[in-house]
Amino acid sequence: MKDSKTINSIRTITTPRFVLSKIKNAKVIQNKLKLEGVLDNEHNVVILNNSLRPFTPNYMSRQFKRFLSTNNIPHIRFHDLSYTSATLILKSGVNIKVASQRLGHKTINTTLDIYSHVLKDMDQEASDIIDDLIYKKS
Image (cartoon, rainbow, N blue to C red; front, side, top):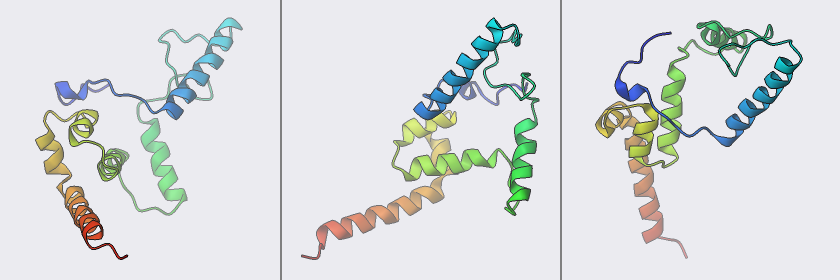
């Protein structure tokens, strides 16, 4: 496993409820398999492959490439999904400080620099909202 880029890369973030539910269900199944003697999961890994072994480090990237190819989607790196996630978080109105911490940025300035294009779009949206509020059609 690679080391984190910065100390801020090591962080705790809240997991969405639907993801947490899936993880808990997987853990219940694993505990049952352990009791039955079918599973020996010495490192207590939560997500396992069909052979009940941990995924290889590059598994997700390979699967993602296959998904893109199967669906005729232009190539992007698996890591690029983090930019999509960040853009969606910011466009949904999440506080910039919260977004910055979730992304593992040392300061909000890093987030602002990287995602300034999103903020420009948000500025236009804010202008449109003000326009609608002031010049409501009765």
